[in-house]
Length: 104
Image (cartoon, rainbow, N blue to C red; front, side):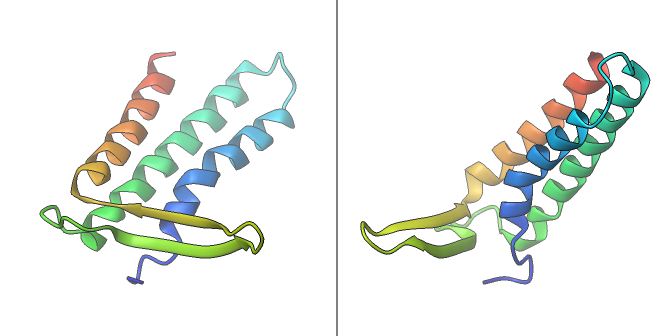
């Protein structure tokens, strides 16, 4: 595993933590809802940029892989990884999320 550690898992589950934080706010507090959504989306985008040094663009195999056994019988595992194309798709998704939050 590369020095990025569990960065892919953080990218997957960080928006869920942001959504849980949004549940703690009142529904009519639009200013703080927008601020929190913008903060979470900026942090998510910046975290996705950390993927670039860990995964070379021309690599044909998975980079930054995470693997954990989850359930023994039946054998169900937690497995994440990015390759050269999906790396840029992850970054594009987090960038579009940021743009969408700003536009709304």
